[in-house]
Image (cartoon, rainbow, N blue to C red):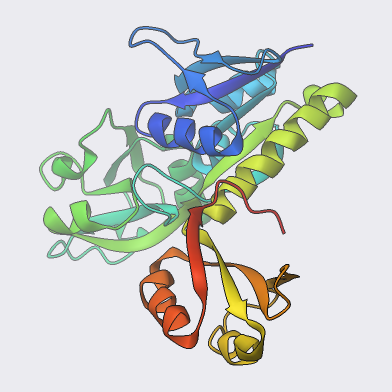
Length: 289
C-alpha cells in the first residue's frame, strides 16, 4: 500500500525536509519537481502550497499532510488532526494572525473599524472574527506585502507574524490576536480509519515528535570513579534518571545522561574537575519519553 503525503512548498519546505530527515525519512526534490523522492517505498509525496493542503486532504486526494492550523481554519476543512508540531520557518514561536493599524490612526480595536477597509490573506477567518465582534467592515484579500497598504489603501490589516518586528518597522500597532497557529499533521478521515494507513501515520507522528523533542538536547557519557559518584550526580540537579552501568574495573562506573546543549559548556568542565573521565558528547536525532 501507499500513503500519499503532502508537504508544504515554500518557506516551510527546508525546515520540513530537515525534520523528516531527523525522524528517519529522506526526501529529495529537484528544483522543478513537485514530487519529491523518498527512501520509503510506502510513501508518495507531493509538494503543495501550505494554503492548499487541508482541502486536498479533506477531499481524499491526499491521505495526510503538513500545514498550519490557520490554513485548516481558513478553508474550514473537515480533517483529523493527528498531532501538533512545534516548528516553523524561522523560530519555535507560534505563528500569530493579528489585527494591526497605524499607531496614530486612533484605531484601538475591532469596534473602531465599523464601515472601514481591512486587508488580509486570511479572509474567511477575518470575516468570522469581525462578525463575532458585531462589526460590519469590508474585508479584502491581499496578495502580499499587506503591511505597506495602510493607511493609503486600507485602514487596518490582519497579518501573520512570529515576532511582530516587520509590523513594528512599518509603524503598525498590534491591536488583537485573531488566531494562534502552529504546524499540524492532518489526515483524511477515511485514511485515518484505514488500519494500515493509520498505523503508518501514527509511526510518522511518533518519530516527528521524537525529532522535535530531541532538538536542543545532546547526550553525554562518561566514566566516573565509584567513590565520587554521589558528588558528581549532585552536580547534575536537572537530571532525573541518569543511566549508571558497572564497568569491568569495579572502582568505576559508566554514566549516560541527556542534557540541554547550551548547558554542556559549563557542565563538561565541571564534570572533568569533579573526577569524570572519557567524557563524550553526541547528538540526538530522536527522544521518546
